[in-house]
Amino acid sequence: GESVGLHLPTLSVQEGDNSIINCAYSNSASDYFIWYKQESGKGPQFIIDIRSNMDKRQGQRVTVLLNKTVKHLSLQIAATQPGDSAVYFCAETLLGGAQKLVFGQGTRLTINP
Amino acid sequence: NAGVTQTPKFRVLKTGQSMTLLCAQDMNHEYMYWYRQDPGMGLRLIHYSVGEGTTAKGEVPDGYNVSRLKKQNFLLGLESAAPSQTSVYFCASSYAGQGYYSNQPQHFGDGTRLSIL
Image (cartoon, rainbow over the protein chains, first blue to last red):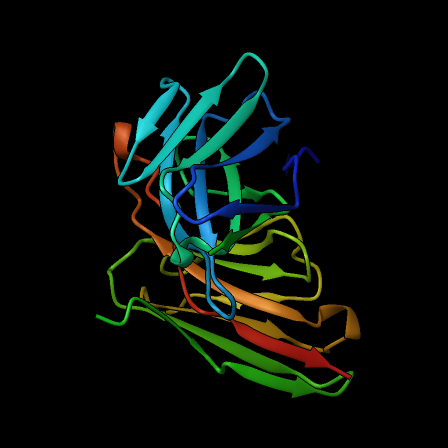
């Protein structure tokens, strides 16, 4: 079946810099997208979500951008901190009913001091 | 407020043994889910439930059974464990929501690490 994929499996950035994590999705019918953060030994933690009727949504230090034309999703983290080190997953699903999330492979973000 | 609690946290089984993983949530969520995560991969949906007494298959349901006898609990069973079922299992729950708010983020437990020899 169709699945969400990520362009880069690893990303290293300097502390204080901005990070951009990318995600490509293949199911054009998907209309709800979520970013999760997973720290070692923990379950995924919700970061931010976006519905297909939006192209940008901002949270605290995070911004998600959605480009439906090219089926691309990105997560921007401003002024990255050591605590941002984790694996980041994007996931897609259809609005309505139970969420049958399809996860990407994940990107490991490493913050260098 | 504990959120989503999974029991046990670790388990080692021999091939052919059976076991049940327990998930409990205290947020009064209608929906509950079971996922597995293999090394270097994202999560894949095994089974899910939209309410007490209801279950449905996800992406990778073979070899697993589930039950939701109470709203707050969702059980995942392995009847005859196989080495291919070695994985980390995550449970999640979410509100059902209505209309525009019909999709609510899932809240995850910290997983059960299962090894099958």
